[in-house]
Image (tube, rainbow, N blue to C red; front, side, top):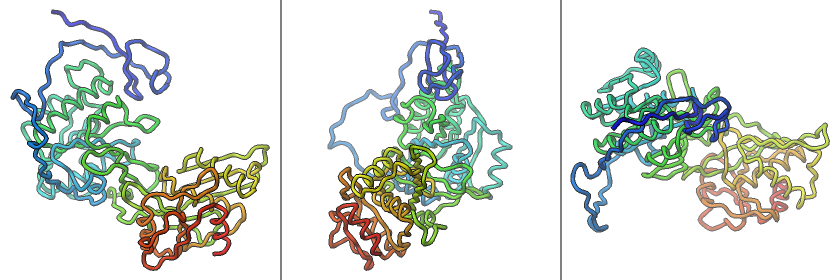
Length: 458
C-alpha cells in the first residue's frame, strides 16, 4: 500500500503544527513563523514498554511492588543535587530550558566533567555545536579526566545505537529541537519530531538505566518550545532564570518526580564556567544601601529554602494626571492591590505619584510573604524615612489591611537570625514559643497600621 503524502506547517518559534498556512502562529501569535514541511503518514507500530521488555504484561498487586530506595549518584554540584532531590537517579530524564546564552550547555558540560571524574561513563551529544566548538568550551572550563565521549549527530536512531553500544551512565542531548527521527518524516523542531524523539529517548533511558539531560529551546515567553506534552513526559523540568548579561543565574525546578518542586540553585557565571553560590541570601543582600528610604528586607520561601532579599520602593510625584505603576520581580497586580490598601486604610494618596517596586537579585517572586515588606518599603519611601538595616519583615496583607500568617515562619526567622538580623516583624498569628532563634526580637502585628507604627518606633 502506497504511503499517503500530505503537507503540514509548523511554527519556528513554538513548534506548533497545523495543516493550514496562516500569516501568524495560532499558538504564540508570532507573524510569518509558519514553515512548510512534508509529512508522511506511516503505519503505526507498537512500542514495547521499557519496563516489561518482550514479555506479556502482567498486573501486580500493591503488596508485590518493591519499595527499595534507588541509589542516587552525585553530580559534583551540591546546588544541582539539591534541586534534583539529592542527586541523579539511573534512568531519569531531566529537561533543562532557558534563554540562549544563559549557561545551559556550560552547566551540563561541567556536570559531565564531574561525573567522569567520579568514574562514571558519560556521553555528550550535540546537535548544534561542532567538536571543535565543544573542545574550546571544555578548555575554558578546565581539564577533563575519566571516560567522557563527545558526539555531533542529529539522527536520533544513530544516537540511540551509540547508547546501546556504549551504555553510558549519563548522557546529554543538546538540544531536543535539533534531533530528528526518520520515521516521523517532518522537520526537526516540529511538534511531531519533538514528541517522537522524546518518547524514543525515554524508552531507551529507562530500559538501559541511563540518566539523560535534555536541553530544550524556549519561546519568547520563556516556555520550552514544542508541545506541553514534552514536560509531562520527562521526570524533572529545570528552568534557568536571570539576565544572561548579569553574573547571577538561578536554576529552578518546576517539576520533579523524585523530589520537591520549586527548589532553586544560584550560580555565578565566571570566565571558567558556573560557580555555585551556597549562601544565596548573603549574595542577594550584598551591596544593599545603608539608611536609605524605600528599602526593606524580607524572607521568601523557594521550595524548602528560605531566601532573604531586598525590596526597593520609589514614590515620585508625576508630571501627568495619572501615576505610573512599575513592578520588577513582583506581581504588578499585587503591587496595585497593596497601593489601594495603603490608600484605604492609611489615608495616603498615591494617585499623583509614580510608584516603582524592584526585587533585587533577579528573582520573580510569587510568595505572599513579601506583601508586608512591600507595604513598609512604600510607606518608607513616601515618608522618606529609612527602615532599620537590622529589621526583617514578612507576612501576607489582605484587602482589609490585616496581616495574615504565611507558612514556614520558623525557617524564615532562623534564616534572618543566621545572617545577623536582630528584629523581625511578622504576623501576630505566627508567633509561637518555638520561633525564637538565637534571641532575635519578634514583633507580631495584625494590621498594617501596627506595622507602620512599629516602623516609626524602631
